[in-house]
Structures are given as C-alpha cells and as structure tokens.
Length: 405
Image 1 (cartoon, rainbow, N blue to C red):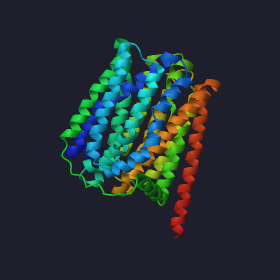
Image 2: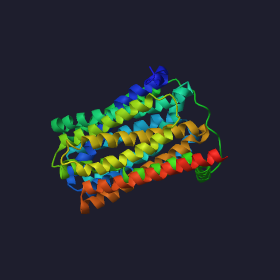
Image 3: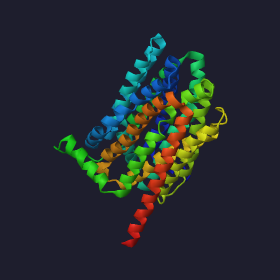
Image 4: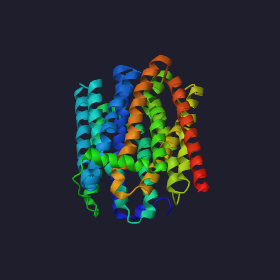
C-alpha cells in the first residue's frame, strides 16, 4: 500500500477520483488545440504563439493571485475556478462545432484559461495539505496527483486521436467541458476544515514582497525556483512544438502525434511510480538535478531519430524527466514552506514555470522556422543540461558550507 497510501484519506480519495476524470478531458483539449492550430496555420511560430498566450497570463497574474489565495478559502476558490474552466471549454466546443474556429479564438480562449489557472493552481497545490490528515502522507499525495496528470497525458491524446477522426475537434472540447462536473462534484462532497485565513489590511503588493523575501531567505527554495524557470524556458515548451515535429519533420499525422505524446506520458508515469514509492523527501534535491539533466539529454537525442516511432524512447525520457523535476520540486517546496505563505510561494513557483514555458515556446517557435524544430530541440536540450550542472554544483557548495559550520 506504499504507493497509494494517501488514498486512505477520504477527502483525497474524492479529489483523486474527480480529478482523474477531469484531467483526461483537459488533455483532450490540449491535444485538440495544438492539432487544430497546426491544421489551421501549418506554422511552428503560430503553434508557439498559441502556447504563449495559453500560459503567459498565468505567469503574470499568479504572484498576485497567490496573495489572494492565502487570504481566501481555498476550497471555495477551487469550486469557482473549476466552474469557470468548464465554461471556457464550452466556448471552445461552440466555435469548433460551428465551424468558425480561427487561430485567434484559440489564442483568446487559451488566455482566458491561463487567467483561471493563475488562481486555480496555487489554490489546488496548497489545498493538498488539507486533504490528507497525516502530513507524512503529503509527499505521496503530491506524487499521486502528478501521476493523475500523466496518466491522463497517456490516455487523453490516444482518446483524442479517435475522437478527432470520428467527430472532429469539437467533440474533444465538449467531453472536456462535461468532465469538469466530476471534479466539481468531488469538491462539493468533501468534508474539510480549513484554518481561518489570516486577516490583514496589508496591500497585495506588500504581501507579495513578503513572499519574495521569504523565498530569498531560503537558499534551497530559491535555487529550485531558479532552476525551474531555466529548464521551463529551454525544455518545458517541447510539447508546443511537437505537432511541427510529428507532422512536419517526421511527415506523420494525428496518429504519430498521439503516440509521441503518449510515450511522454508513459515516461512520466514511470517517474511518478518511483516518486510515490519514496517514504520521505531525503535526497529529492538530487532527483531534481538528475531529472533536469535527463530532460536535456532527451531533447538533444531527438536529433538522432529518423522518424516518430524511433523517437519514442527520447519522448519517454523527456516526459519522465520533466514530471520528476516538477514533482520533486513541488514536494520539497510544500514540505519546507510555512502554511500561511504557501499560496504565495506556490504562485512564485508557478510563475517560474509558466513564465519560462510561454517564452520558450514563442522563442523556439520562431527559431524553428529558421533552423527546424529538431535542431531547436537540440539547443534547448543543451540549455537544460547546463542548468542542471550549475544547480548540482550549488548543492555541493551548500553542503560544504554546512559541513564547515
């Protein structure tokens, strides 16, 4: 029962079930948005543009949203964000079924979802603590939550491939909208007692500054967030260019794209099984270092693959490395940070992730139009590997300073 020990908590079981259904719908939409954007434009730059606007607003809004999440009831906040996300998916379905979808609809509705995510994600990540009664089960709960995301990453693209072939992109968006009902129902069924939010008359800007200073006072958390920002910029955007690789460089179609995304999800699931079986957080910072280096190797390795099918090992390594990096970082931060500042720190972590991804997607999309997506991946992989080496050296330097004391 080691791997699933967090499931013994009723609230977490409800969340796990509802979220598991909803996340499959989320990946249906992610697949359909990328595929439809490429069908509409046949442009790697336009793919990067859609990815940029589906993530950049999260990076801009998240730090301020994190301050508000620390002041609000996180449970109620999640219910509201899930309802709004469901309505956004309804909008996508409407334009797709009406046959009037344009690249600008994808950009605008992606930006709306990014704004919702700016509040949803810090609330969701900081709420995990309150769904498990035993703090010793928190790392397992975080790992299982990441496992849900990546199980959906495997199933979602494969299901989406069939749905697009049978009923078009609109069906993916419609199923996603319906899937939100499961997670909304699970949240409403929970019995959870949250500590009263801290009452304050401080300005949002002042509370945000307090969160930044708090991170600056914790060397490990600071280093983790910097590494996350760098690797997100270089490697976190690899999914945005994947349609250009599968359908352009490799000459495939929806099947090849779905299989490559599924391979990334399979690698991620293996990483989650490893992390969820760990009993504590000891040594997780070294997992972060190895995972970021593995991401670099995987992206650079795509240079050697002549087609989509032979690229699958690299995709599995990329998916596993990225999720191991994110999950280990998330677990360390949630374990170390004080509860009254967790929303702010999680929002800064999300800013590092979601600022890097859209900037990387936009820059790599532009670069791919000049040198091609495969060569762009190789340069991005080199950047991830270098960042990993720098982080590893900072860990060794910190260990030596601690020993000297």
